[in-house]
Image 1 (cartoon, rainbow, N blue to C red):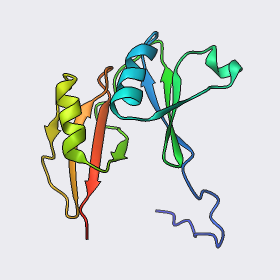
Image 2 (image 1 turned 60 degrees about the vertical axis):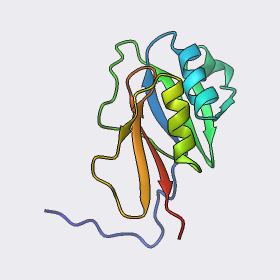
Image 3 (image 1 turned 45 degrees about the horizontal axis):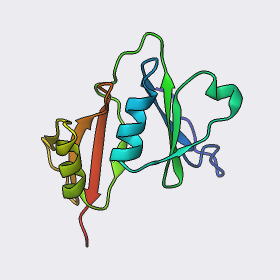
Length: 132
């Protein structure tokens, strides 16, 4: 096995955005879930990219991009994990909106988390760190 030495100045220093796939014409459902339900602010896409469909949302210092995939298949394992302030309130909103919520099958120290899926079946994790 080859070992790659770490450079003094790393080339990659942060994430800019996360891309999540969605089916064609899924924008209304994506707006309801990511915008209305999760409370993310929708961003305007540049005109040349807007023509492709999909949506962009702001999530803290990062962005979440929903990109149209013609042969869409939901991501069952790969997923974003969103930090939330009030997990109980988010869970209640998901339940009220008809989204199935799964409790953390293997609790992690220091956090509470739940899982759901977006309207397209992509796995979504919601995390609330415990107060110290």
